[in-house]
Length: 405
Image (tube, rainbow, N blue to C red; front, side, top):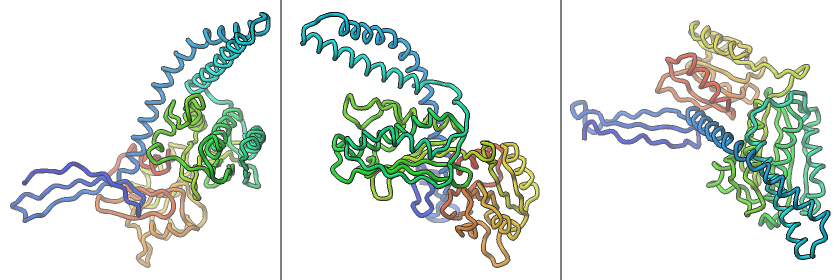
């Protein structure tokens, strides 16, 4: 029927690794028989931003709730644990009653630990700032769990970068993140966690493109696909009752964000789970490295606008008015972000964006500028298309989306 429009369809392109929204509507009968107009939009960055906003809003509400509840529980729990301990120390009691008191004391202590975790999760503070070597954080944390590894028959493999992997932040909070990740990985490969295969946990570090990273991977069964979306949700846990509070990963996620980084899950290459903490690398004198952006476009107004937007964000901007200039710039240094006209082409006819698939030229992320009908595939780096015309705000949001924040 003329004028009838189907509901939008959102689907994922495995080849492009993008999320696409398809809208279709029939052309009026007078314009042709059976014709339809189909609009395809790349909504990957939009969906990523929506998910981040929803998650941040949810975390904020839960944080306010648990902060008040935790403070109210602190005093009675302290009284229960303290009086039980006092009775155990000073009053002669029968063996059976002593055992009851011991259970009361242990459970009050356990509830107290949960309350401390809640307060840590809800805390809104500025982390201590100092230069921290992720190699040392990973090494020290693995040493703390050495007895736990031996007890559960777990092999811990350390693959630390030869050079220091330095970031700016709070060493105690970062160690808490690594401790949570290693504890979860140990549980995942243990017999208690239901795993009967190899028991290996790997902690490794690295640095690339102005980022430092630490990854904890395990040889366990991995995370079921239906649970991946809940991993960083407060109180979600796959452990049996009494074995986990569901706050370790949300707390770690919050710490990563407070340090200007991110914590992400991905399936391990050989099975199992892998969690990667990525933080801005500390440069000379412990200062974060300035991000470098290449803007390539024949339009002088686009060059001027984009340069102003990214310079205001603290980035160093390199501009190029031709594909040859842009390719030469990409050969001199690796860019954090390349913003380029999708139709910008070399004399050979090869489009500049296509030339960036060369590993020697690939930036950390690419944002193509084009029209609604333009399509292009990036290399191994994240890639998105921003449709003209666009506002400075849309350019800024698209850049943040393709760079993951």
